[in-house]
Length: 226
Image (cartoon, rainbow, N blue to C red; front, side):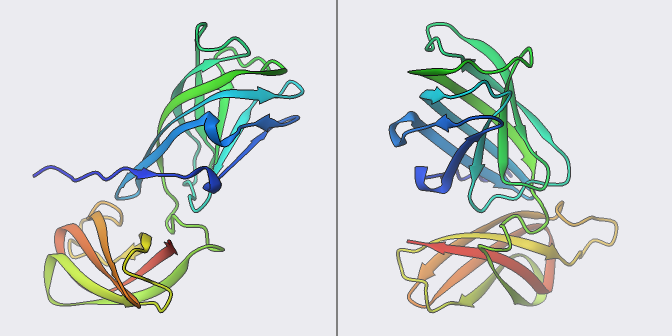
């Protein structure tokens, strides 16, 4: 049985663009795409940020994604970049998920500074796999609740979460902050496969899929957006 993957599109409004020195100016049209998918506590991110401007001479260009909280260690990915030349001339570099933050840092292959430019000709196309922090969602933006899944243990449990702010068209971002192990030899994060949600007025249903059957209580963090 394959593991289902759903890619989530990240809007420009959920992104903050900065630099280690000066500014990184990214207009809405410069963000061609930014998507992520999760399996357990792994997150896969890919994006394309093009035709941008850079002031000063920063060693890093930085992207912060609202609601994401990376794990305890830096994670390294790959990027194709252009440094003040447009994508007719390309090089490679690093995309680094900074530990315990929502930041992805972009560095040139040789570690040199990015070139100052106002010509809409600097950009990165990247792919990155990282570990998520236990809670995933930033504590300041998420609501935490404890849900109960009925016995007998099952691989797919349906739970209902009541929230007056939810409508039938709401988008729910949800993550399990802890999962009781039905397999005593297992470890948290291995059992959990996916959580799917279905919104309705005043509540949403969460379908929690695991590798091994489980029942009991589970703490989840979630956010609601239109």
